Every structure is written in structure tokens, then in C-alpha cells.
Amino acid sequence: MGFPAQRPRRLRRSESLRGLVRETTLAPGDLVYPMFVVPGSKVRQEIRSMPGQFNLSVDEAAAEAQEARALGLPAVILFGIPPVKDAKASGAWDPQGIVQEATRAIKKSAPDMLVIADVCLCEYTDHGHCGVVQGDEILNDATLELLAKTAVSQAKAGADIVAPSDMMDGRVAAIRAALDAAGLPNTPILSYARNSATAAATRWIRRTCARRSRKSPSMSRRGRTW
View 1 (tube, rainbow, N blue to C red):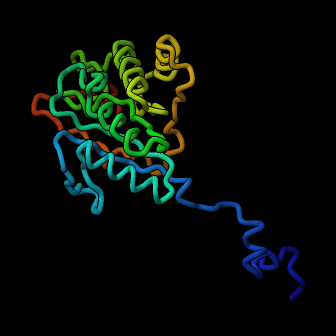
View 2 (view 1 turned 90 degrees about the horizontal axis):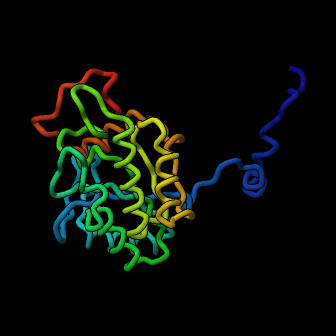
């Protein structure tokens, strides 16, 4: 056998060599902790589809964030499950909404914890879809207004980053314009584009957040946004 042209084992001979050429490292500082916030007090209810993960009330979320920060995690991302849902997702942009309240509580308990707020409407609508519904269609531009209002409300409550997870055309531009107009030009918008196994992630988030109403309209596939 001739001498192989490539001998990558040369670079695996010691921990020092492996460390020098390692492409990827993973540490607590690289992680974002997802939290699912629910109404109430002292609520810590296990999520059946995600064993070991919990729906947390605002007080429990604040305590959890404080512990996570002590462990070296730099950020949490908040998904809200409101006490009441309606056709226009008004709980999403309510200044006293569940995510807004959780943001303020986390910033009080762990001031240097970054708070990322998920911007979507499906958790807040009584029909379970991610926007304003008319017939069997999601109204794109009408939904953009609500998404923008939601992002501004979350940022005003103290969210460091807003993260739109809907599927509306033009949402990033609409949110950016609304944040700038509200005097929040330094609030970043986080993309979900790098999610792995997006379909699987969407399924468990929806199961956790979007309790579907019996009156949810039967919608053609093109009218859905998930």
C-alpha cells in the first residue's frame, strides 16, 4: 500500500492539536433557553411533548432565568400562552401581555440576561392561525400591522431582540420600520432561518403554545402559514 496523500490523524494525536484545529465548540454561552410562559403564579407544569421541559408562570420563569444566567447561559427566548385569545391576537401586543410581563420580571431578576421575544400570532388567536383570517385566507398586509405592533410592544417591555417566526411576506421590513418609528432603532431582529429540522421544531412549539379552538376555520393548504 502506498503512503496516503492525506493523513488527517496527524492532527488528532493530542488534545492540544485537536483543540487548535477544531472547527466547532459548544459552550453554555452559545445556547438560548426557550421558555413557555403561562398565566398564574408558581406554575411549573411539565410539557407532555417535551419531557423535562415546563410551562412556567412569570415568577417561575424569572427564577429559572436567574438560575440559567448563573450557569452561563446568555439568553432566553420567550413564547407566551395568554389567558384569553381572540381573532386579532390582541394579547400579543398588550403592554400587560404574558411575554411583556415575563420580560420585565426576567430583567429584574437577571438584568444581564438577554431576552429574545418570539413574534408570532398563532399563540394568541382563537382560531390558531398566524394572522388575520378572512374566509380561507390569511390577510398578509393586515397581519403585518399586528406583527409590527407586537414587536414594538415587546421591545418597549425590555426585550433585547425580537424574533418573527410567522411566514408573512414583508414582515422584517414592517417590523424594522415600526421599531425605528417608535424610537427603538437599536433593537435587532433575529432570523429563524438557521433552524435545523424546522418542521419538527414547529410541531412541538405549536403543541405547547397554540391550543386550537373548535371554531378554527378549515383552511386550504395555501392559506396556512405553518
